[in-house]
Image (cartoon, rainbow, N blue to C red):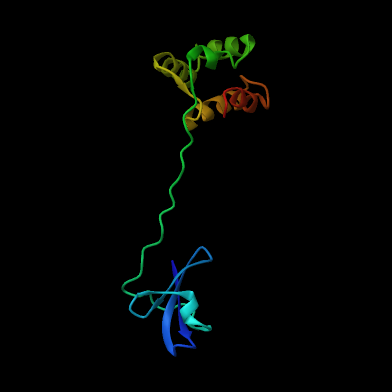
Amino acid sequence: MKYLLVHFVALDQNGYQEVFKGNLQRITDMDGNTMSEANTGDIYVVDGNPTQPSWALPDPVEELVKPAPVQLSKLEFLEAFTEDELELIYTAAKTVVKIEIFLDKFKLAEYVDATDPKLQLGIRALEVGGLLATGRADEILATLGV
């Protein structure tokens, strides 16, 4: 929250404008009481960077919206891959421990959450590692509803 020390010409008194991300949140008198914009009349800025008043409100908290999980059965997940891709992945798991761990976690899971960032990174890692053709990770994620 940014505070501007302003002067209300019609009232001949000072107050504050509270601004957050470029939007005016409220206008107050020097004691922090909210004032109506209609009652303040013309305003000019006295100080564009005053010290924050003691009664200042904390910045509003922006809540992150987490996407709803896209739960798939294990079979639905595997069907997003071709048989050749699955063969390459399972063959690579015999020598690459990280792929083996990925498959073991998959086997133990009750369902697959396609919105899980770790799953999405894992699919992209398969593409980077050459087990999926270029662009195939995006296709698979789209098939999974992500």
